Structure formats: C-alpha cells, structure tokens
Length: 427
Ligand SMILES: Cc1cc2nc3c(=O)[nH]c(=O)nc-3n(C[C@H](O)[C@H](O)[C@H](O)COP(=O)(O)OP(=O)(O)OC[C@H]3O[C@@H](n4cnc5c(N)ncnc54)[C@H](O)[C@@H]3O)c2cc1C
Image (cartoon, rainbow, N blue to C red; front, side, top):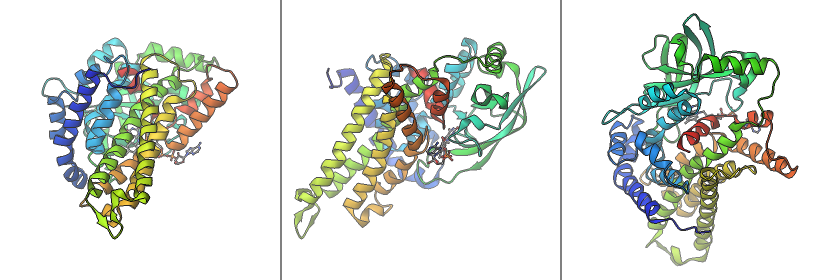
C-alpha cells in the first residue's frame, strides 16, 4: 500500500491548484455577489485543459482513480460555485453515456460541452416539486404520439437550467411502475413548449445557475429517448410481468460516483482551513500569539484530522471504484457523507475560532461556510446516505453480497442518479 501521489498525479494536482488560485479565486467574490453565469471562467478552464470532453477522458486514464477526486477537490478549493459551473455539464454527458445508444452518445455528448473554442452546457433534470428524495413519484410524463414523444411537467432545482443546450429529462412513461417506468429524454433548449422557470437566489454555490424547467406539450423526436424504444419496451414488459431485474447496477454505480462529490466538499473544507491558518498567523491577544495557544491548537488538530479522515475515505472509495472492488459496505456513500458533514462542521468550527471577522463578507470564510451546506443536500442528502450505508452494512452483515431492487431504488433517492451516471462515464 502506497498513499503517496505519483509524479503525474502531483503535477495534475499542482495544475488544478494553480487554476483555482490564479483564475478562480480572484473572480469568486464577484460571481458570488452577482450570480451571473461565469462564461469567461469556463472558457479559461477549457484553455487550461480543465473543462470539456478531453478533461473527462483524462479522468479515466488514471489507474488509481484519483484524477477525478483531485480535480473535484482542487477546483472547489478555488470556488465551489465556479467549480460547478465548470464541471456541471458532465452530469448530463454522463447520463447520456450511461443510458444512450452508441449513436446517441456520439451525437449528444459533444453537445453538452461544445468543441474547440465553443462553450456549451448540459443539464440533468430529475427533481420535481413533489418528487425530491423519493424519485419514485416523478410526475413529469412522456407519452408517445406517432413519431414523437410529448413531455409535460415541471422540474425544480436544476443546475445549468436555462443556459444548457442539452437537457437530459427523466420522465415517467408508466406512473404505475414507479421507478421502473422511468425513461430519460434529450430535450434541446430551442424545443417549443420547453422553457426556463424561476431562477433561484441561493445561499451558496451562487456562480452555478439553478432554475426551474417547464415542459408544456413539449414534442421531441422519437429517437431522443435514450436507449431507444425497443429497449424501453422490453424493460416495461419485464416490470409489468413482475419480473425482477436481478441485482441492481444502480446502487453499485452510485457508490462509484459519490467520492467525487465528497472530494468537492473536501476542497471547501481545506480552503477554509488554509485561509484560517493564514488569517491567524501573526494574530495576538493578551495570552500571546493565538497559534501558540493550546485552546486554538486543539481546534486546529481536530479540523485537520477530520479533513484527513474524510480524504482517506474519498481516496479509498475512488480507488475501489476505478479498480472494480465492490463497495458492498457503502464505502462510496460513506465518503460523501463524511466529507459533506466535515465541510459543514469545519467551516462552522473555524468561524467560531476566528471570531466575528469570520462572518464578514470581507473574508472568504463566510462564503466557504455558505457553499458547504449544499454538500449535505444534493446528490443524495446526508440522511439518504445514512440510509444507504446502513442498509448495505446490514445486508453485508447478513452475508448477502448483492442487494435487491427495492434497496437499490431507495438508494437512488435524490439526484444521486446524476452522480452515478457521471461516474459511470468517467469510469
Ligand atoms: C443548488 C441545488 C442544485 C441542484 N441541482 C440539481 C440538478 O441539477 N438536477 C436535479 O435533478 N436536482 C438537483 N437538485 C435537487 C437536489 O438533488 C434535491 O434537493 C435532493 O434530491 C434532496 O431533495 P430535497 O432537498 O428536496 O429533500 P426532500 O426530499 O424534500 O427531503 C427533506 C428532508 O428530509 C430528509 N429525508 C427525506 N426522506 C428521508 C428518509 N426516508 N429518511 C430520513 N430523512 C429523509 C432529507 O434528507 C431532507 O433533509 C439540486 C438542489 C439544489 C439545492
């Protein structure tokens, strides 16, 4: 076992950190204030080789599986909102890659990024006002009408909503079948009947646009059903005849992808930690330099230890996923759960340590604190991660090596599916 990064990994980490510090940090406060779409930063990320199709391909080239988590952590070290604006399109691309036919992948994945200098965006739309953590109750419908699908419904909290060129929309073709009646469709931004709804004014990750999406008699060609009609018909037939689909790949897929989300949270925690040490350097009170005081050292040690523990979980899960080691104990979900909780706890704890200055917009710590919260909410909430880990631990304890469909469906709650698909593509 060797925990050291190799030369290529170290060079990649350094490159990502340079982009985070030199390009993202100086722009972060302004985009956080205005919530404008950071086209210029996304374009720069492309120029630095940190955005687009080639970047995704690079992630898969590391046999240790660490490029992806290094990338996520370092870009989030710069600014979580900008990082999501840069990397968010990969969710749609991954959804296409995991469900589409080879022809659909070749046609639509490049449309999520644009080629050469052209910048395009993708969005992945699952969440609805009445289908949140429990995606089994999706109400957006897709009905076949001759050579077209007709989609109706409202999606909420969609990253890249309103700016995406390509949207992967998950809808139900048979509500009675629950999650087994779902299918994914490609909807392009200029489709009649498709429009952006409310743009959300958020607590954190404000450089990443989040909106409602509204579909009203939105007609799309038949071939924009991902995977094709024949495959869908077979799936529906199996579900209607009550056949089980065997051990679900979904649960395994989410395990593979959750470490990337955990790594994002880690980037925020590490940024908050580093900023705090810099800020406290040279600060003195009546007891002397604060960094020499034992009460302060207790806190610094705890925060550093928690961050390191979360990073070890994230790296281990990333390595397991890349090397096909089954995460039957929920190791992927554990890493996201731990890193999300650590980011929220660390930013809160460091604010307490710094004192009132920490809450001022003059310093980035209050922004790190605001940005951290989302990592306990999206891509499967912390509570949902706990359900998944608990169920997998119990199943493993009982000696089962696979979990049944019902458990897998529970694990799909929330937008975990987005990350699952993303990892699938990256892997
Ligand atoms: C900024 C942002 C960006 C997003 N981007 C996207 C996107 O691009 N695409 C997309 O489809 N969605 C997106 N989402 C939606 C996101 O994935 C959902 O917020 C997520 O599914 C969780 O749903 P919820 O927050 O509505 O929680 P709810 O499902 O409403 O749950 C409320 C609370 O109850 C808890 N809870 C629910 N069920 C249980 C249970 N069984 N046991 C214990 N506790 C439970 C939850 O953990 C949560 O704390 C985004 C959300 C945000 C805020």
